[in-house]
Image (cartoon, rainbow, N blue to C red; front, side):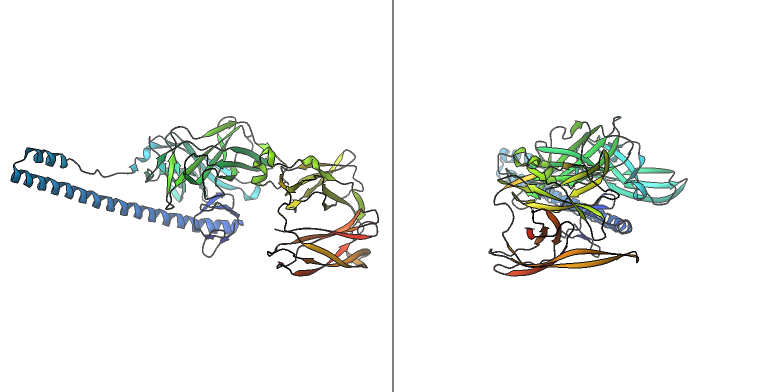
Length: 562
């Protein structure tokens, strides 16, 4: 997602409902897309969003007052009708002398609609002792006030908020507000909140105030929602919860408005992180499913994750589009003891990859890394050329990726990330550079594969016809540090890409590889500036490919479309 800083709207869906969910991270509460912004932009954006939030609160209060006024008018009308009915029945009773009519008039005088007061005493929301925490790491860590609130009102609370007033001694410094990260806090539930603190000021104490509490306007009872598949994963300092939601209703009920709160705990039961996220789909039909990815803000970095939990809020969706929150009859918090699954921080893990069923997974044993080819770059530094091959005969691997660890003897010499492909078809070869520093040989490589999905043939790629029409061997030179000049060989490869299909093909990427007389890779280059290609049309390409190994004898290509 991107944020339009002029209008403060989500670049994906145009919604202006933006919420800060992490360090320099903002989430659109309508579509759930996430964006990261720079520190100075984040501070400015947060100030404006606070103003928007306060204005939204003012509007909500005004709407509430209007609803109360409308309700009171309705009550007045009801009372007037009831009184009129009493008078009418009394007159009819006198005229007819009917005792039964008198009795009906007496019963009608008791049908008075009571006014509904949704407000709840604020002392029913209990606040634990607050503590100051640092969210983020290093110089970008931001001070926050962590508060855990528990609902002891006996009623569900809608959008409960907390205001913190900060002091330096007796001098008031600033005040900030924050909503609890759930739409509805059910009776007995607790939820954490991170409240911004004044930047660069000496805060000696703070006072917490619970803002006006109210019940939801409407709600329905329903079963608690649980993930059909869920994983808590950690990559370096980043922790994510990913889960799959299924609408398993047996009737025609459409579900939507999915929101997830995930919380981390240390072995003493203290909160050490939490995150809030939304379902990728806005609503799902019976039998449908959607996934959720929640980025969790960590604090208390010295503590290991000993347990975690999550809860899912959701609504029923009417044919008119209106939504009604579903309240459970029991505890909706699902708690798990233990820590997250750890993955290499260089792996790009997609939510769909992590949540794939066993039948949807690609067997990583069918991916082969061919023997490395020794080579030199254009200033005669050592490099190695590798190729990743899909040995499956009937399955396309989707978004293949992994981390190659390099060794010289028993000593590790860094890593190389396999990334950039959306898919790899059976028998295809994806070229890779390994460029170790201060290393003259690689004796071993080990690959940590990411979870990958499979697709049956013909797969997702749109067919193109790639032709190589010419090659020209050239010699170039490069001057290093104004003192050393190196010569190197390269090949100018020309060709065309034709679209034989019936639809426009865009975002074409083409890898052009040089091979020696034995078919070994001796150099390659990615061409990623090709335009969209209309049906029946072709576009030319030209690539200058460095020759890193032995003299080339042939050219091969690999392409993908999106």
